[in-house]
View 1 (cartoon, one colour):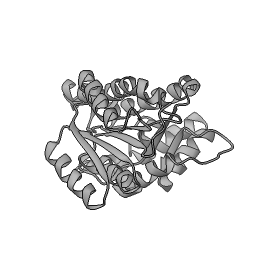
View 2 (view 1 turned 90 degrees about the vertical axis):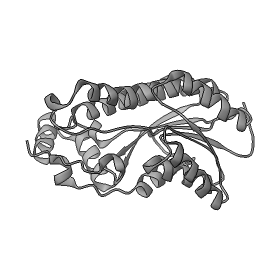
View 3 (view 1 turned 180 degrees about the vertical axis):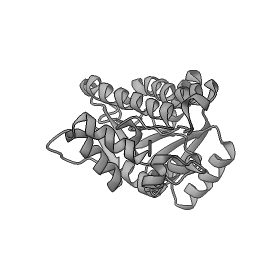
Length: 265
């Protein structure tokens, strides 16, 4: 196992929003950060901002739907960290809202390609490095939309249900390698991804979480904490915690009714 002083974290979709805030959080905390995105301008400004905080960020272009790019960027980054990969954060994602039947097929496909295939490609490419780093972690950005299917967010929600399944299964499967896999569950966050989004659920619950709320939650979820029970899912914010808790104990018909009312359908 590699054991160097400086821990490392690789973040996809890091040029803006949650990914950027998370990169800065880890950089300020002494991590060697790999920040990757298709937005070259955003990455350049991120690098400068991290340097002003005395943090070290390695940046590079990454299209998460390209498995070859994943392998190349991870190999480059791990070389910077002497072979170590402590945390992989699958953050890159997109959201499209609207009536299912009115959305072009290309938009449905794009959400699956980025939100699901991007997680699969990245996690698979990272496996050899995670396996060789003691106590390695994978953090997947899930969503409260994976608690129950949301009208006007059909394919987005489906993609997050898939991320949930990937997280749960791999956390079990990879425990033998000392790799833990976790899912973050925020509600709607104030980012460019939700700008202009208006659905029944956003009308009911609002778009209140900030990128700092989520980046702080991600950082906290990766801290070594002794828990009586192993934790996989991490709701972010009180509404998400309440919805998540309620779904565990309420009958299926009641969960459906709550979501029907929240979505005004």
